[in-house]
Length: 77
Image (tube, rainbow, N blue to C red; front, side, top):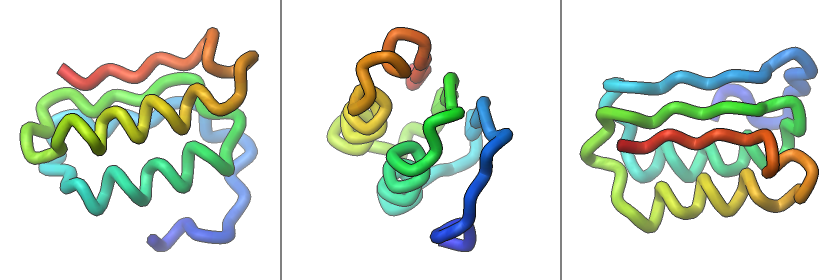
């Protein structure tokens, strides 16, 4: 992933809706979410090729920090 190892202190919202995201892309997103505490919303809507396990992994990564998970929104419909 091109963003690996970079700090993104102002990144707060990610909208990957209708972007043909793959399960591999979702795995990369998990890594980004785990290392970027400023993210408060993620939209993966319309990415039918992302399976339930990958969507759940993104949600789980968002919930690793209790304070942040109260604010975090992950939309996947």
